[in-house]
Image (cartoon, helix red, strand yellow):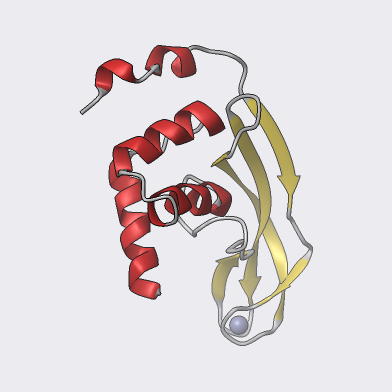
Length: 139
Ligand SMILES: [Zn+2]
């Protein structure tokens, strides 16, 4: 392990997180089960860690929650293009980190360090491990 060489303090120190707001809310959205256009009944918010260019970046995503009267089920506006359903990171973070391991053959620790230093986002090695395994399983 190379804890000593990791400039953790530098990155963790408060240096102004950039918040980028994205509003994906819609009045209606098709039900994922039956396709029926369903009305919005409430609004949800989600924070996602994003790849940073000059500092830590967080996406604040506003999305709509809908109710299908036909299926009598609630569902949230899909945002698979942006992030995994229960993930804390954007797909871009995931893609970038996985590429460091698979395409550039970095170790998990090295990739984690690179993500911190270059993109201002901390991806735990265990999380990155899961992503890489999922990627290799899909391929
Ligand atoms: Zn439905």
